[in-house]
Length: 153
Image 1: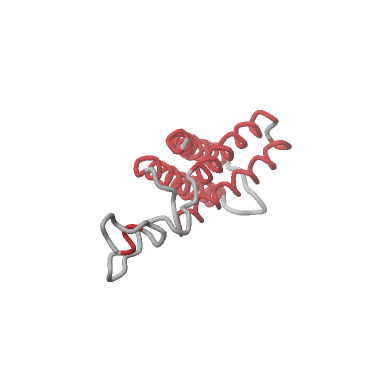
Image 2: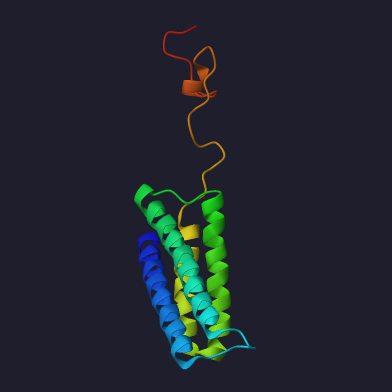
């Protein structure tokens, strides 16, 4: 699921950047102004926002693809980045219902589900997992309840 989520996020990043480039060109060609702001500034803002958000989505895609390749869940900062992406997709889904429609909501919820699935797919490591504890007498290798070796008195 991490691979699918990474590919979907990468595709979403490309679509989002292209959409912002298009919207920026529309604003520039029609010389639209928002509250007296220069149309060129609005165009540039749309392009910068598209680039920054597209980069954010690509970073999330890279984190998911890395998790898939290493077969280990993202930890620390990268896990927080994925959680923030899940929150952003949840909010975008909620806003898209009224602005775009239920189809856009469904797409956002599918992406949200892929991110959450990738975050929860890997089992939590038990507290005792890892290397066995060793003591000076070698008892840690057999465990405390191991029977004595044959012939030992």
